Image (cartoon, rainbow, N blue to C red):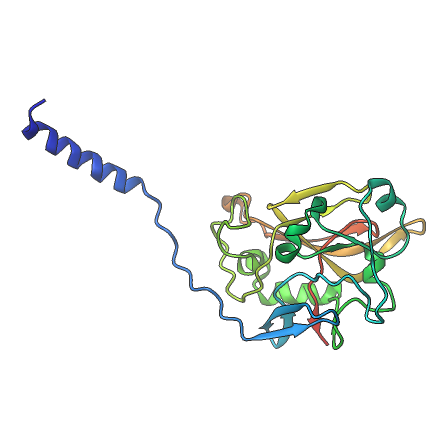
Length: 240
């Protein structure tokens, strides 16, 4: 084909390809200025939201505040049967602990020896409700999720992380010891028992933050639900 005909064709193709490109949304990374240190020396970035100071990272302490160890439970049968505090990493990928932190059962949350750094606590169901209300309720998940796709797998286009909370999709461990939802959902314990609960099978409240599965439906990207005590969820602490 003569060059004089080829050049216009190439120009048109270039224009078409440019139109198909998806613009990258502008985002200014949150500037963290505050932190808290637990008794093991783990440092957690913190953020102030509506006058309350929250951890911007998931707890990864392996000890109660009196120095006693929290048992790491690996095997499915042991996780299912334990009636005391236990922790684990997702699918036992220990290299992910620095990113996602550790998962704990509710027995560890509820232990009187304390799991939060001194001067801090595991937020109650009502404190989680207050946080979501301040962040816009239906839009709270967008404002609290980590921005981008570094850890979120899909459907995270509307996340802004404007408060620096950086909610991460670390998944959960069910009461039978199996793991689910890594890179798609966040699960955070509250400190509040769920009532009514079966005496032999008690439950507690947790907060789930998810990606925007269908923006056309305008559904909230968070839920308040209950799990059995032997579920494994992450913990974000709030200052007393």
